[in-house]
Image (cartoon, rainbow, N blue to C red; front, side):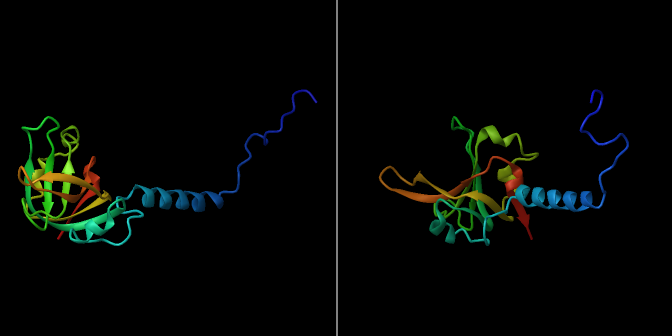
Length: 151
């Protein structure tokens, strides 16, 4: 038949009882996926982080000291949790290219605060002296939403 289509008639509306349930489900999934701690497991301490290299976890501790390395080419910011440098046990690293995403200077804003960071725990080699090196667990942060202040 010419002029006929398989589309519903003009003005036909699908039952509305499905939309709130679908919308609720979509919002719930988006909130879970968008939250920094999603899929990270229980929170761990900076001391425990060394046992979770290669895992996405949430690490919580107090910022013992911080440093903005503007003399380095990539201008990193280091936030050392629980123990200050040179005895640091876990470090949050914010690269210079990501500093402009923060509305404040991270090294001064987070100093002496209890925070949690979510992300992939990796190791980096830190030179303590010309002859001694050690591997430290750290998390690179490229977005402020991955750091949460705690009381």
